[in-house]
Length: 478
Image (cartoon, rainbow, N blue to C red; front, side, top):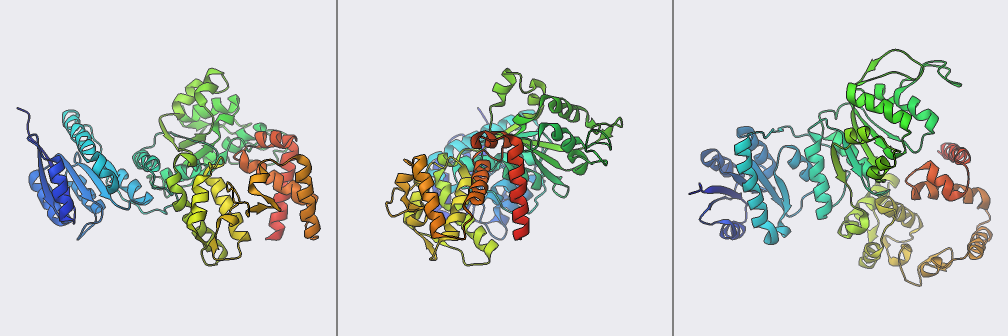
């Protein structure tokens, strides 16, 4: 006869304890209950249950602290934290210190038994294999990734698990979905958090300069190399390097990157000295690298080196339940930046935001709210203040309803722009068009200069000149 397994359930709510015990207890499973963290810890030490399921909001110390104490006492212990309001930070920290899972209470009526059975199975496997490695450090970092959807909870859990190792990680997702924020979170929750984090967009740097940007160059290595340059791998030694749009990296640079990953060594462009570095690589792409490998535009050996752990960020249209929370976050961020009261959202405005498919993902949502905040004349945003995605005939862009903007011809667009110039004589229309179209093209392509130039119908060199000119204008304005 199989040995009876024990589950310890900890919660301040006696009704929940009774319900959980009724759901879980059987001839094969014994259920113990406690309503405080200190009593739960004493029971755990005496009974050594296979699984602990604890509410995060406990007294006299939190569920996270209970998790840390239990794992310190018994590194193989499995703990599931439960919460009605799990934050990004709490989920990541719980997974980092070794929680088996983190579940929201609203999900428990549907999957309490599933979660418990999965954990008990894992407990049996761990006892047989005895390979579980505890991580017992909790660090506080700024909460920047926002989301309560189940899809984002899985992302947070992966961040917590990945942060404790030095393994290369690949973050995938559409442009604007927040891949760099995931990379920053992995760094912030890792043992390298007190070292340098550097990000590079491989698509935003000309091919002939990317190698120098990453590895540095010696004086005289090429025309214009008037002095020695220290590359990013030297700058963030012991830290983390985030390579965005890795799929745009030229094959020659891929070969040199592979050597760094394999040997931890490289040479500056034009140099003979072998340099050593200890850098964790996190890369991101919105392209299908498996297809690029098949087309031989991306090295298969480099792909396997980078694809040790993969974290996929779902597009915003697949997690519309996060839109309200993200909107509140961005409006608070805008208010902090402008030192002004935070704007509120009407329920109608929230529905407009949730109904829109957001092809530009989280970045587009933030930009939309920034524009709405600039143009708002009241303390509450209504649907008419957010024309993007609305069918409200009163919501207008340049005097044309949002529904009509989808049907605009080139002639109508020109007429609208000239009308705007007539209404505002101070608007220098041609420089404004150049600047806005350039910035919009960069936003729509995720700062990919090659695709942005193609979208605008100009060369990449012309695009870079425009970007430099816009940057100079912004600096003068500041």
